[in-house]
Length: 319
Image (cartoon, rainbow, N blue to C red; front, side, top):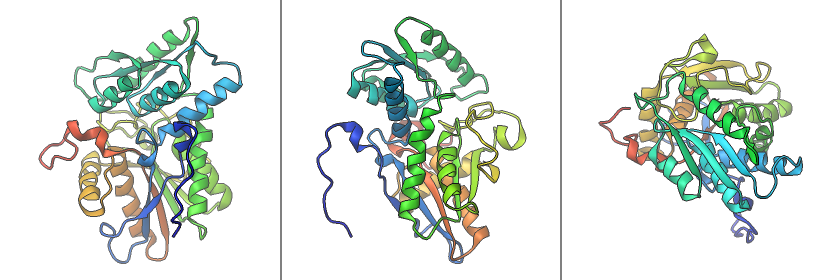
């Protein structure tokens, strides 16, 4: 065990990445493959989105697209917005975010705490309908056309993938004997594709599973529906999805994912958000089919602290 503390960081941006991986010991039955969860909520804002926010901003600076005095704008349900707000705060940029009341109030407050200017699009149902995110994107595009605005455009900016490939590189280092299967829920699909690219390069036989809400199976069945899993199921085919880099797409029951979030907290000490619950439901099913001696890895996308006001950890509340 390495007992040496990390060296002092020169900036909060230097604390992004190098997140730990933990084995599930109670939730995985005997006779199943081993299941490991990479705890991305160890990043500064509690989400893996810190990785892509940093790479999108820094690559825009290197290309001369983003300069001091400009305003950064994005459409986000919260985690990307929080991460960009954080990076912009450290670097000194004004940040404009287009979001909605359909997303957790904790995330909206986090963006505001980092100094972001919020423009909220109202959802009548309070849920993520098929048209909500496209409306948010269109509004962000309108802002991006204004003078001295830079649209990071997480839905098309491939610089985001560079940050996510770092997760794959870390997994390879953390599992020198290899990974048999990796699964992850998809929003724009940057994280899953970034990790898949690295894992497939190291071992082409590693199986990659893309996950989405069962009630909005755009990837697996071709239609979008309503759900309440923030950060995934965006209502259209994820722009970064590469059919060459994944083996199957699975729709996962939102109810089971929410139940899993509570089990993870109560039995494994992992406090994570809704998409993580879906990830672990799928990972345990993969572990069942693969059997002992195999290794399944998935991601704890963000911290459960972002969902305390929404009833996720209330055993009697389902949203």
